[in-house]
Length: 482
Image (cartoon, rainbow, N blue to C red; front, side, top):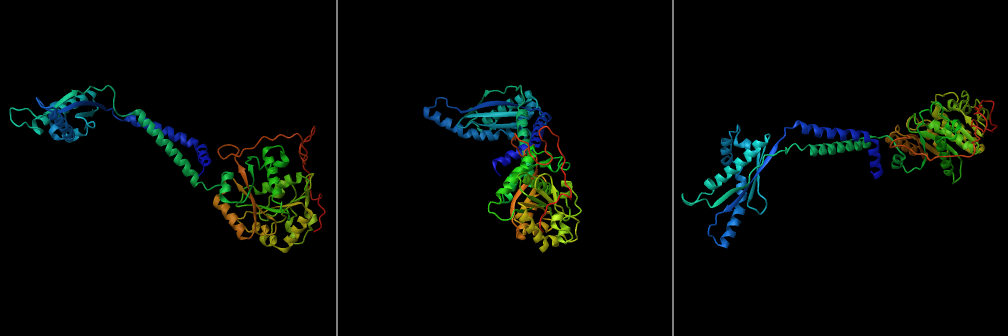
């Protein structure tokens, strides 16, 4: 994953990350408030070797001996030898084993000091335990561990208290700020982890970058999501100045670059599955091509679930099916749409054998006649994964333009459609990402477009005039030799 992928994850899941971070901080605070405060008190001892009248060398040897033996005294602190007298002196209702968990002893490196720290829920009790433990250790060392050579002699090792315990005023635990910080970090890490996991498990196409990772075919354009697309599918005609209409013109420009090598300008528009905007893309692309003055034939090759006639607002009772079975001449089936040179060939009646009709010799003759008399032939075909119609048509045309809906098309479906097309011997010319969100981390940004002239497409607003409706009927037909 690249840096922009992680930024996109943070942007897309910021609410989850924020909520879990706050919950983590709250959990840390709640844990701290639920804990009983504990206090710590420390007593410091000094260990030395008696050296009355000793020479300098003896003093050095005594200090070295004290440093070596002080570590052993630290281990003795938590034994019953030291703690039993403390329990008896303070009248504690506990055992030496239980009390040892409240006491820690340590010695700073290369010193003869011993630090004894006692922890208790009562600050005064903590100080009393620390002092009593220190006194008990001193007694145990001088009377039991380091016994003098004679009854009249003193112990060779002296243990003195140099810093008695002070009653603590603030608890040592819980550390509320530390717990809140740890809870915040854990919540943040959990939120980011969930965001990454959601992204990894999400198999749907979201952005143009997702398409680039799936195929080397060129990206011909991106079409923004329009919640009102069902009410006004022909956005290039209905609102020619909108950014969404301009995206279809960008698609038109990129499509023109696909034909730099010459050859027939006949293209199939399909998708991996249904409801991905292929028919809307086909119709708007045809209108955008006709805006340039080119002669365009829009063919509804979806003989199973046709949509073009409804989108274009024309009669669809007679169309491609009638031409293929010889019932109607091609010239009579074509319907002129708008003021430009756009002609529509609807699907006609739904046949029982769509794939056979589209793969027939009659379809070859129809496409040959259309490519001869028109600059562009745009065919709306069924989804590739559902039926073979689009793959059959791809072998008779220049190739397929594949539409993929952002947030709907699954990556494995898209790769499956591409693989199906390659297996059939068709050519994938490029992809168009539809339904791109205009807001959020997956949004597709548009530049600001300003025009000084008004588009002269049928139905556009003219200076000083009202929007005129389109006129499309079977009486307005092209005279094309079949």
